[in-house]
Length: 149
Figure 1 (cartoon, rainbow, N blue to C red):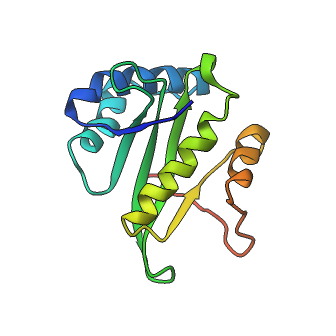
Figure 2: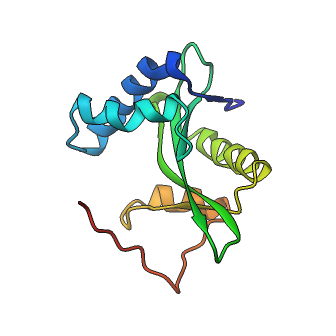
Figure 3: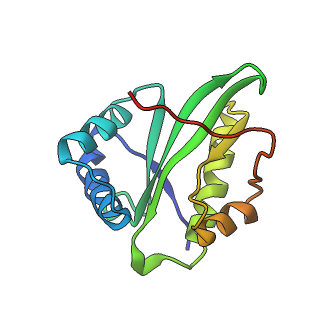
């Protein structure tokens, strides 16, 4: 299957929100629809800090992927971060996620992004294998630390 990526725009907010709600429920993320909307709406309205892509046919997407951006002096330019990726359960384990990650890499590198990162739960072996197959490696020199406000 060709995992077409469709850059989500304002008209796609409903489909994107529905997919994200399903993903967040599946992951046990405690989010209100208001919080979800605050995170997704700017992406489809063109905020320069990230983008959301629907996966599959635009009229009946099978998933989505969100990438955010940051500037890195040491990497000499823009970095991308895969923030969320979701595929409907019925289409998983068919190589679609691999195709999406590869396509996203080509799109982003063509737009000048120098590096693509992803955070993966240590216990999520399936996701870790997916990213390892696609050239992602642990950075043994750095730890990802967080502070919420």
